Length: 629
Image (tube, rainbow, N blue to C red):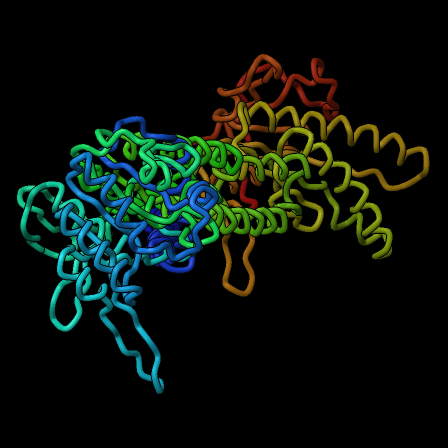
């Protein structure tokens, strides 16, 4: 495998993982503003709930048209307008800056009552009253209508629209700050009340996101004011009195001085309440407007992050998910994800409280989790496929335990091609061709299977890999595909065990009268190329190189020398104290100009058979040229 190919194989997972992260981040950003919008809103609602009630004082008083007032005055709704005039007179006695009335007066009643209310409104001189732009379906056509109070009331008040556009989950979180009708702009009731409170004459609309009341900047989100609720209905964050208390003089008028005083319905029977983000409760429209006015006057505007920042956060979260896939195990990755989400949530809450900025939740959450889960699933699938591939490739060569070890550390070996130092063992049965001529094919197979099976067990015990069987010959390797420490020693110890195991088999064969097999073993250490070699139709994991050839030639030389095991100087120099080596001599090997020093193991220490006449005294011997291919 070339370096370029290796580099490409390492790069492809990164490209794929980051590509998935990019796609997931973009989709999460898109869906966060669509089908998952209610989840985003719910996450922002939690910020209000965790923050709790705002304790700063609001320059607003709410005079409630409530059940207590109905019980006290015994009047039916709508109340007579001269009774409403008494409420206005009682409030005006305290010199408020603004009286804001959340009651429609689109139809006349009695002339006396209408005139009395008009008089009270004119005397106060600072009254803002609600009107509306309604839409009606007529003959399949939508017709907009601008509704205003009766003329004598309309002449003495300022008008403001009261529209509560609901979010995707049906809750009210924002007010329409201004609206266009017949090419003119009409402003919200709460905006008009704030303008009069600030003593300004006009609005300066800079954009759909920004309106100025004099020097007072009002920040909007696409023409809508996001209400920074002070708290829920039950928390009484807006000072309030029942309407009957004002009429009957139970309220000190100085409580209204320099404030915005809102007159509005709070009785559930009047059905003027709306679901709000603080839990499952509803809030009267007049009180929602009170929170909106407070938001404007104190400039406590809430800022959703812009689309570019939102997209950046989504992509960043997806990038973190991708990085965790590449760098962490699944369980560790999940733990880190929980930690990241916790830190992000705490950071988002801090930013909300300190800077009133609404950070996105759904897009980063989806990006992080989906990217990690998707890439981890693909990674696990590929790992399983790779494990199956490795097992099918190597179960003929190495032991099951070795395969399990390989599968647990896939990165520690290569299934492509590699050049590394290895120890090679070549074992062959002496004179097997002539022996096989004396036997039937079935007998040959039986004897070979018994012999090769026993030798294979030994090789596996010493962490060797069976490269191939060539008839009666065995080619075994060490240090591939798994890295093996002290592989020269492991190979020679394996050769000793193979010789000892064969001795026991010979004793059994002698008792049963079977043909006795003898073998020779050659061992060599050196650089080899190992990997998958072949074609697309057939490929084998094997080893090639001069080191392999020399091991085969040493095996052939064992018969001439009269010993069972031979190995080279390169192997001998790396043996540990577990093996006692004896120098045999120098052999001239075909293909090499210089003689090769060869060694064997001490037969007495390692209990090995030596053929008659062989003297191993460590003195150099000249050995005939080896020509076996």
